[in-house]
Length: 196
Length: 196
DNA sequence: CGTACTATAGACAGGTCTGTCTGAATGGAG
DNA sequence: CTCCATTCAGACAGACCTGTCTATAGTACG
Image (cartoon, rainbow over all chains, first blue to last red; front, side):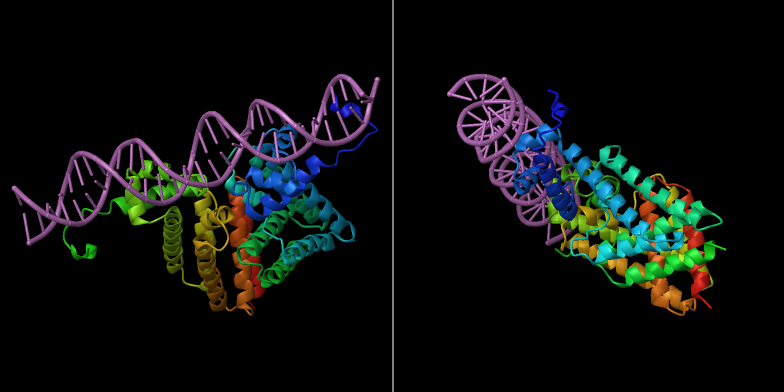
């Protein structure tokens, strides 16, 4: 029973991680509703019973998949921010990191937005999306305050609006390169106007 | 055969319109993948055979639903624009009309964005979304040019980014009223910066 | 009146989905 | 070696989906 009472032997890193990797690839590329359990376990090389022993239901697997994306995005943006000195450069680094994502071949928009469009309201998917969006907005508002904005919540919200719009347009307009360029210029204009 | 050859008697306006009305309500509120054919015909009070005689498949019904939303949005925005004199006021009127949508109780985000997240790539849904987005972007670019922007395509794209971001945030953040306010101020800032 | 045409309700087929269960194989601990 | 826990492959149940078909009822028109 006490699964966590084996401190030394760590032979796992197998079933759960392979399932999450398969979920991350298939759910993100084709949608959580479209991709069935069978394709997940097929790609992961894991038995169906193991999946239900580890996660309990498909919804739990979807929630874990979204949590892993939340963590990965947090790590990626934190690393991008740490390289910069000024708050203004940190803000630009976030949009540069996003623009770099757009150029990757397996970009399919914001995972939380897509999953939320497919899932029922009030479930774990909606909660995961709320947490991610709150984290992003808080990040923008804190950077806006550090940059010396007169109204940091307004500027933070505006930056979040541009971030959302750019991600959505990059998905819907098939990666038009003008999106990143226009976004970058709009961010600069808003920063210049908001910081005295 | 010649269905259009009955000029006087107009008892129709029935099956097809009721199906489209039911599709517009259910597909938009709950998603095109979640809502099944049975619920559509149930709400419309139409037999299943009639639906397949009129539309041929569910995908065709979804395409007709999206086309009807495209038309309705076009009519709504055109009416809002016509009341204004200057191009700048017309642009603001578009965002005011969007903000008014956010306050309605049955707002659930952009129908094309949501449907596109659920549907397979390369189908009729994606084409309908492409057409709608091209129409919106052209509208913004033309207004930016009329407003005297030095780079109308860039300003038009930026306005579209804000429009997308606002619609997405309004859906994901449960209608936070700060969205409309921040969007409006950002639009003004971008207009001031782009128009000499 | 008779004759097409169309709409209706609902059964039905064929497929897919989630989640459970069975039985065999595996692999480390005592 | 023996035991026990986990994993595997896959069958299975129950539900839901799209799309077709049958049989019946209503209706415009010659």
